[in-house]
Each structure stands twice: as structure tokens, then as C-alpha cells.
Length: 48
Image (cartoon, rainbow, N blue to C red; front, side, top):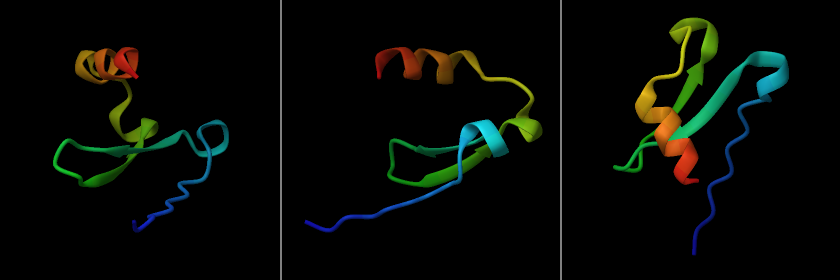
């Protein structure tokens, strides 16, 4: 199949994370912009 490679830098230097939503959308999250991690994201991370 097709492969999609996405490089968002790294968490340590830029405090960014690349997430894929249930509908397949990709989103670059910047910790400085959100300032916190929501409970739903913490729960999703626990599942992974």
C-alpha cells in the first residue's frame, strides 16, 4: 500500500506532536498554543 511519512520535528526541541484524528485528518499540535493536554487526549494516549 501507500506510505505517508510525516516529520514534525521533535517534542524536545519544538514541543510539537503530530496526531491523526479518527477521520484520518492529520494535525500538528503545538503545546505552547494549547498550554495543556485535555483529558480525552490523555485517555487516548493511555490506550496506545
